[in-house]
Image (cartoon, rainbow, N blue to C red):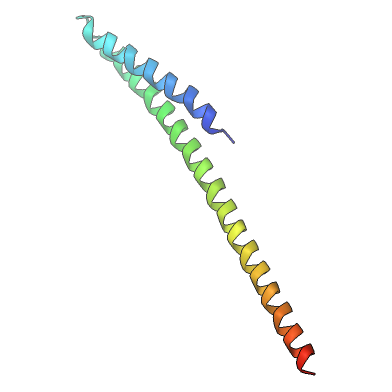
Length: 91
């Protein structure tokens, strides 16, 4: 899985591709075939970035769920222990 540090590299590539598109548009001799190619490249890079963010989000959500369920199990065990000690004290 890619990390947030990797996304920095992805965004740098996106910026470079956008700059090439700007350059192509600004040079006065617009090559629409080249623009299509650059737009496709930009789209692929953006998809890669979105996939990375999605992976990071999924991992974080999974860990949050694990932490929550770990706490509820721990709380349930503590509740059981308190109930058992109260029962033992009453006997």
